[in-house]
Image (cartoon, rainbow, N blue to C red; front, side, top):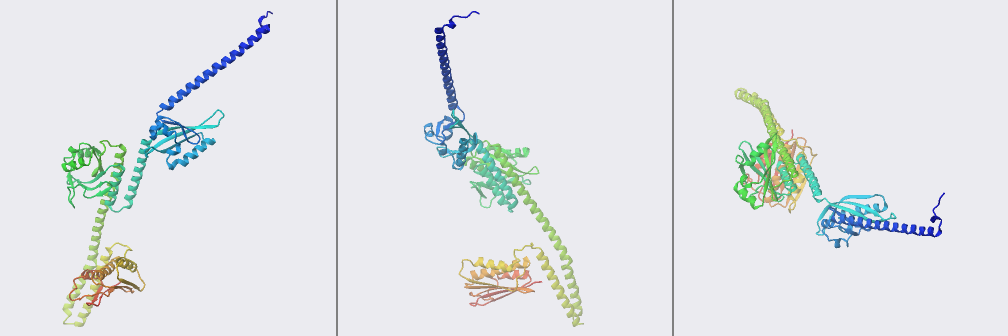
Length: 545
């Protein structure tokens, strides 16, 4: 075996070892330099990305103090970098979400979560609020200890605003839909729909027109202006007048007829008559959204919404206006159908009443007529029998009168409003004399029982008329009201200690005619007692059969 001699030389071996060590040190130095260059290069790339990012980026210490912020984040918040570095995230966080953010950062430090995302509001330097989407992660050092937070912030104000608007519109639609089921008065419901439409679209004015196909005219029904519904929207319309316009020469109407879809009117000069056009021009109206009210594809009216901002309408705004127009249409048609049903029911009731009159009253009067002829024949020949016939005639007349009253009573709705006259009368006396110096005493005798609405209502009105007379004319200091229930009749007595009057000269005044007519309607008897200086007593006696 041949060996290399130098390998066995101790000096050469030492020199080789030194060279190897130096080489290792050099390699380590080169590796370190390369690592430092890589770190410097990565940091530069990080800084470049940090500063030029299209989203906000921040570094914050574990207490939430900003360490670094990029320009985009400053643009979002309205602060300068130097201002931001003197602040913490809590200084610009809306109070509603601050506690949630603090809890999330605590969970990040504890390792319970690795990332935190949320939608929140920042308070800008000018005091305005801005919606952002925030993503936060925790940075750790080489030993794994938490060192700082890094956050990415995206401005979502526009999308969030649209989302909130959509939520508001859905809530508004739900509110008006509930009103449709609970509000019995058509105009009050239409007022709310018009106000909702104007507010949700953030416009100043809107109008509701009703269309008459017979005359080819639109009539202005109501206008919402600055959040209030007005019946006289334009200064040139007089009190009680209705603005009615023909649609025959209206270009937008032809488009409505053809498409049955909303129409955006930008050429106001071409589509509006002079006075309306001048008024809208003065108000700064740039365009008009006309939304048809459709029922079975037939136009029954229109919404007109005035846009003072631009000629452009967001699709969401048009959809909302259409939805509200559908609710208004449904309310109008339901009211019309209810009125038609009411008229049909009234006609049916009239026919029923006519038939009943024929079957009862006509027969009664026929019997009376026959009995009268017989009585005439017997009055001289047999007076006793003639007297019996006259008694039967009286009974027939009373029967006919009872039937007539019963027929009238059936026309009144079945309601309990006037059934408890004792309570209703007591409440009415208290209300009418509230705030006056007059002393009142209300007494109820007997056991109160329910009255027919027709009787209860008329007795209440008679009492109210008598009380009004005492308050306005009698100069009374004390008023006594008594209601007496008996098995076969009811008594109402209203008495005062006022100045009284002469029945011979005042029988046509003080509502006495009205009271007398009401007593006649319910088959009662009215007795009025009064003398000058001695007060007045109104007594009503009504038989209850």
